[in-house]
Length: 116
Image (cartoon, rainbow, N blue to C red):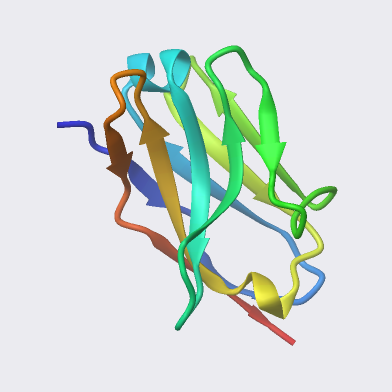
């Protein structure tokens, strides 16, 4: 069983910044696609950003230029730096690991609330 543990959520004002962290086993971060998803109330879970095993990144159009995904292999941690936050970024953010075997693992989620 792969355990992913998010932290860093909370309340922030529009225009502010926040950084989410996801602690994961080192081998998971290094050799698989890992990323962040979010789910707002009444909405489907959507991809925010992903980083592949070779370091390529991909972002949802709604966060391009504002969010940055990164990975620190030495600390076994995945990050999501969120800048210029908007009220529509309010959601529960989930860390995800999509293994080469096809299995998916999720963290428990962390709430991000952006006030206007």
